[in-house]
Image 1: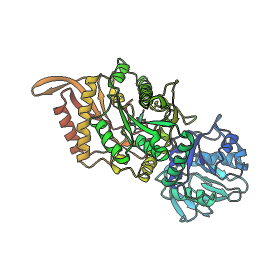
Image 2: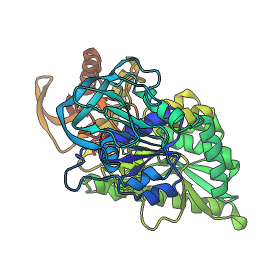
Image 3: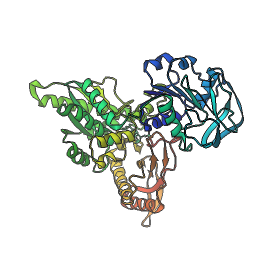
Image 4: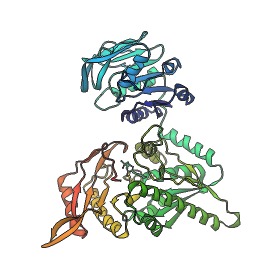
Length: 516
Ligand code: XMP
């Protein structure tokens, strides 16, 4: 892999994505990893990301100079660039002028890294510290008002650096610089494609599972559908899919899974009615992390029960079910604190929410992929667009969209409001523009309203339409006012308990997409 070393900002994820967009496989690792540990991963190249620190602050994360003697191509970006210059004996100093935002660099010598660049490039910068003299052996490629050395390279040692951020869209030629590094600087080939991912994962699943029996939890979402289709391709009839109806589903969801997915794949499907089990376990619980852990645990208990039933059904010869397939994605892992060094933002039910006494071994063929990559894999596997382009819906379902205790009555209210919002957004043709639109019931909040001459004392629901590339970051979607008006008027007219509809206009960060 190409290792992207995370110096603690949001940039590392973006860099990893851009590398993959260049069809080269990449992984994010924390800056606390030793050079030895990185080399064990046998990296094809290393990219040092930007970060909030300044190289000469005490305690700033340094780069071990041994990395540059390992013969691995390295690209330093922003903070990574400065740390690299510092480690190799270059001069790093306060910049004559800070550059935050759009800037222009003069390219004096394109070298390998800036091959194809015009003499001037618009770039995105964010620095108050600059490399003022390059380390020995390096050629300076570009400069800007605040950065006398804005890009450099040592072609022989295959070491490269950029002061600006090539990974953001505001650096229009950024992707080209990254590709120059990957293809020309590091000699990599763009051969990481959906087809290869499928071939690799099919082989990996076969090797892991052998001829054992496997179950897969289907949620109705893209991830579990793609994971199931992939495992089905790998081990065929050894797979049984289990759909747990936990009562936290949206209207029509269970029926849709049975109809669409089974029709597309012919997979064997068992539906488990676990509505009472989940509601019972959630009674009285209001804390989001506790809810997530309970839901994660009850899912597993349901899968265990389904596995026992399967074995019982097949009689005396029945072999136990050893493996559980989950559609875990890379962002779930990173956000659950599973990407080492990352903070635990929330426990995704299928990662941080798993019980300790798990009886299954997990099969997670999508664990390294971003959502859009999963969609490409789904299309590659021949799944219909209706499944592949379905908007994300979290495994814990409406359970994390009721702020307060989850009860059967509250679920009914939220289901009704959610169905209206989804219907209107679909009618307005916004399904692909919007990444997803959670509808959240503020069950413990009441406000006064007036309906038909009478006073009401009802609950608000929140519309949370977001646009996103991969759910790691998101912006609120500017849904046309007339569409919002229709949703609001229908919900307040048709759902008696709701007397207010409000719009969430927070990006991620700082908000997450779901409210819990
Ligand atoms: P957040 O709220 O973390 O959500 O910004 C990011 C994306 O992940 C979905 N999500 C989950 N999906 N299990 C899932 O399968 C979970 O526990 C979970 N929590 C959040 C969320 O809907 C959004 O698409």
